[in-house]
Length: 120
Image (cartoon, rainbow, N blue to C red; front, side, top):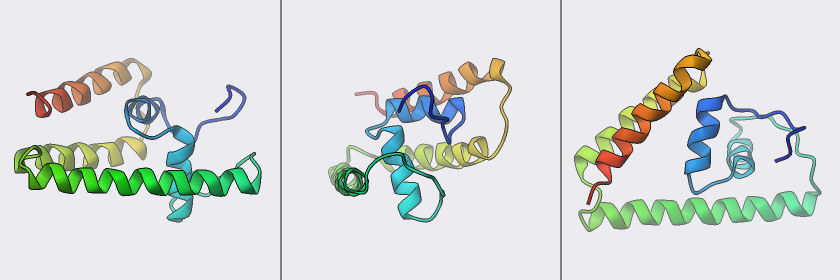
């Protein structure tokens, strides 16, 4: 995504996307396909549908990974609870304005909780 294009996401969501398995464009495409975001894409139809396919395959892979990790006991019920609570907070953050001086603190807390859940 070029600097000229305006992001559909606030700074916190952008930081989380950067740490995820998906690009911002892929997140936009998934949201668009699920009718959760109306966005214009400045790419050809062919490139758009290729990215739709790539995004779908990544999402399928993510679901299989979650099922596998849960089934093997790598992801424990407490980990799922942490992810659910963080997800609820992300929903609130996505729909609200966060003071710029608090953004780093929010990202730090999220990062710390995820790293705790992933400790091996």
